[in-house]
Amino acid sequence: MIVVGAGMAGLVASFELRRHGHDVVLLEAQDRVGGRVLTLRSFAPGLYAEAGAMRLPRVHELALAYCRLLGLQLRPFVMDNPRALVYVAGRRHVAGDVDRDPALLGFDLAEHERGRTYQQMWDEATREFREAYARDGEAGFAALTARYGDLSIREFLKQRGFSEGAIELYGVMSFRETNMNASVAEQLREVVGRAFLDMHEVVGGMDRLPLGFYHSVADSVRFGAQVHAVTQDSDTVTAHYRTRSGSFSVSGDHLLCTIPLGVLRHLDFRPALSRAKYRAIRELQYNASTKILLQVRSRFWERTDGILGGTTTTDLPIRRLVYPSHSDPEERRGVLLASYTWGQDAIRWAALPEEDRITLALKDVAKIHPQVLEEYEGGASHAWHSDPWAGGAFALFAPGQEAALHSDALRPEGRVYFAGEHCSLWHAWIQGALESGIRAAQQIHRVPVAA
Image 1 (tube, one colour):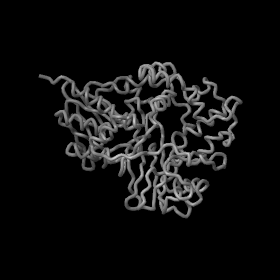
Image 2 (spheres, helix red, strand yellow):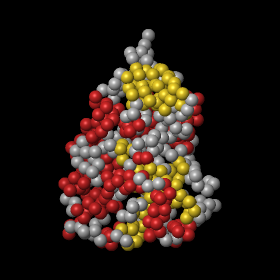
Image 3 (spheres, rainbow, N blue to C red):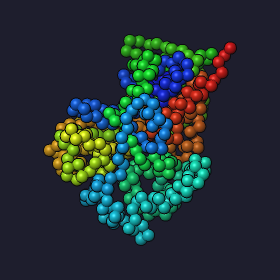
Image 4 (cartoon, helix red, strand yellow):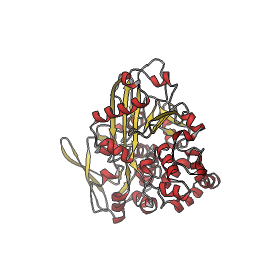
């Protein structure tokens, strides 16, 4: 049994297949495991920050169950904090004040929208979805997303009576301004499914989750093994790969491919995959994401603004600041997620050298927190669109793509199976990668053994 890619899907599939008696070879092109779970530790001793996945919602029970199984400690990840800030049109506000008086932001709203927060307007627009989910569960929700799956977020809001000013307000405050042309089904699934409520993080860094799997399958892993071709016949499947020392191959009964589609597209398959599979590989959209992190001498935002966790919203290029949710009384220093961007914003940051990203992000943060200029000690950044092993941060359906592409993206092709967050409906989440990895492992385990 061959698994290609030691991200979360490949790790959990290898873990479960081995637990059920399968011999597994796990090929990973990089020198680490985790894929888009990447904890950066290039800061002062003891400090770390997440370049990729950074939180686990309570409703993602599978991910939390594996954390418990692997003995990982969790703590709250703060999403909403009324003491965090909103910096829009050059003016600095406290988030709680904006909730009490939305007119502070000055967006050009229709008469019936004035005095209401973006969240109140969104809740009204999506009431039928939440009621259907509460009444009929996934079946009721699926029926509605099938009906609206051809709409973008912008089109959905227009249909629900949002003015252009309200759409701008929603885009800025929800961090989705650069993704307004994505399928509204993606947004509805996360919000109605309560993906942003009661969040957790792994104490010591999110990379402890993939490392927990790795320690159970370490003797199956071959690092530095870049797969470039897959061949199969009626009896076996073979992965052809390169290492620093030459070209090699390994054969097995089945192969599970878990690498992102942007990387997968460069693999040669013989015989060729189906036309529908190639269409899904070509067309399924990936979103960009860039993070810029600043190490500071002290967590001044806790002292001067009383902010512990949560997010500051801006219309600046940095878009949003995410504050650490945990305050260690024995460590003065901290790492501030100074910029977390998606879509076009993230691509623009990715076009810059890392040093320039950090310099420009520092300039933007100083408009909100002037103290950062005295406290700053160093920084780091990661742009997933520029990562050759990712080719993007996460899959993100365009309108109509869920119906048109999803089933083809995950369908097996002979002895070759597919998994990864792009093969789930929980795009961008560890939960989606785990679900898809387990699904594929179950499919392989249930294949009858030839006599």
